[in-house]
Length: 227
Image (cartoon, rainbow, N blue to C red; front, side):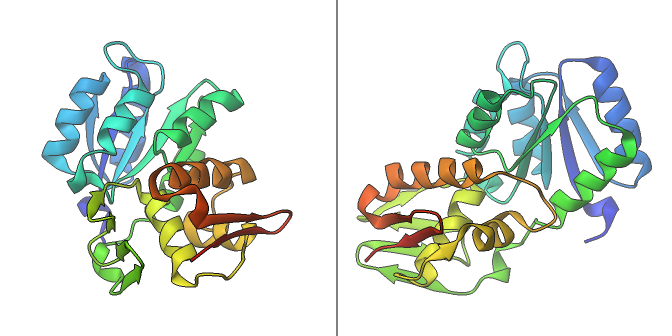
């Protein structure tokens, strides 16, 4: 995918931040759209279907966490990568972001070269649905990895991208214990630094949606999918 074909949506209520980030990413060859709050962001995302959304947390009208949750409920944006850009570095803010379905977290201020490197790393994780071509059926659970669809008890579930990839990985080999590092490498990529807490948050969300009994924690090792 050429840079000019890559669409990035920047969402921030600070005009200077939008201008600086827009300038650097546009100069790098990406196609950029901007929004100053969550409501406008949702409208722009539906219209332009960006590959990546860089989303501020603290905004008027609708904050970043709520915006992310709403974006993750839009089926045609299931492939979109969402990363937060915020000055808030507290752990609870990061957990809230991952809880809402974010893929990553960038703390500002950030140097232009670091920003471009981060964006490159995030976009390397963008995969088209046709990269997957199998359907996993386990009891009343169906995971269509070609169409990014999960059906549980006959009801279709909309899962954020990373939850879907984590579920697909664990369900691909029921009973196998996947080590935490292997999960991080497969789902998040070894070029992105995230903590163990990230996996825990996503597992908790999957337990709420798929069923607590389907996931077993192997203390000090990782997780497995239980038949």
